[in-house]
Length: 531
Ligand code: CU1
Image (cartoon, rainbow, N blue to C red; front, side, top):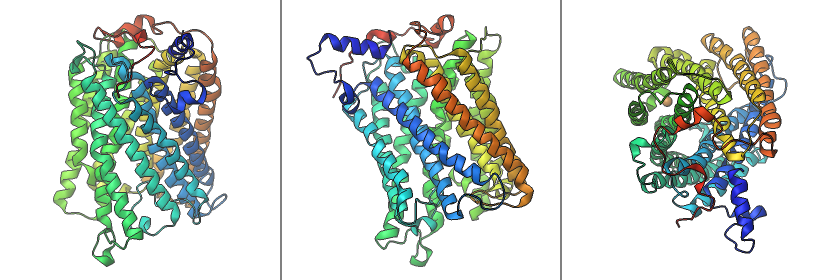
């Protein structure tokens, strides 16, 4: 019996007590970490599809040179909104959904520390998403300043920009509250015996991620608030004519933005660090070094921000500092990759769908890591800045990194969530189709970037046609692969099918809990709330 059904069945025994609201109330008033986790996951899936449709619009326009479908102004709205929706609507909330589902279970807590704040964190998101997406309908359309919302362009666009700023404020508030909840839960609500250094890696990576979020979301809020006051209240923070500096916007934004990219990858590291041992039937190699590597990455992420700004002109000493600091991050990241490989080494490996995604993650994410190193080299970056090479780089880390890990986690833990096994053949089809089409989409972009094709343009010179056609074909294939996932894997595995065993991964399962967990999975049908 699934955990959800179980909770439900239990509630039916007390049909008249209102601790377990039914129907829409169950979701609107949800204080149960599992229900809230489910809400987060559905929300992020909806945003993934919305952002995906925008991406396909971009790739459709870029299938051929010339303008076919969209005017350049609208094209730039598509790229901007694609980025904002994927970062703030899809990837981040998906990891928070995983955190809600898994962290209390992993540390033996009854629920999240602040159950009602947890509800509020989630329900801020749908209005923010509606605000963001409906800005397309405003005069002048959605913001077209790029997801980074650089001044001075962002200080001059229409009302869509204000709606975007408001939406990001709301999403930021949601993230901060979610992070406070995660930190408090992990620090205060671990079961007896569950010391910090015994926690499963996903809980560890999220603890560190939550600190990053609390540190940098207010910085983003500051940057976009200054943008707002420059727009409407006569300030000149980013306006050179009034004594301000548009480059300062970039400093503030990337002081948020670089830790943000680790916010989107550290929980992915955590998921992969649990799947690899389970399907290698060995404990994680170098557990403590994984914890320290994660912390090192988080700390270093605060001192590398200006590697996004080499082309703005800066003193050579600054260039060198940000170049070397950035390269330093390759060390703890390398520790992680080597630990994953050492975990697999001489293991009794099997390749069910979660493991395929996890190994695919290591392989393809690491390519994104290498191109990141290349971009960190200042003189190279000045050449590659704002070309498709950078677009290729960050899609290798965000799609083949974050999204692949999310799929790995879904296939791994989903049977616990729904109570049903997904179809293994279809899961593997989904993996291989995604892996191939992902690379068809984004690998050619390296060549386009090296050849000098700039990003954020609706049109391009004829010599870029072949690789663009290939990328567009790949993108539609990738989109179709996710439609296949939705209709042939996800929905069927929720409706029913083969019942998942209590330990779906059998021999592999025990190793997920490399420490004896004092709190097994199914003891929390009716979690008490704390606040
Ligand atoms: Cu960065």
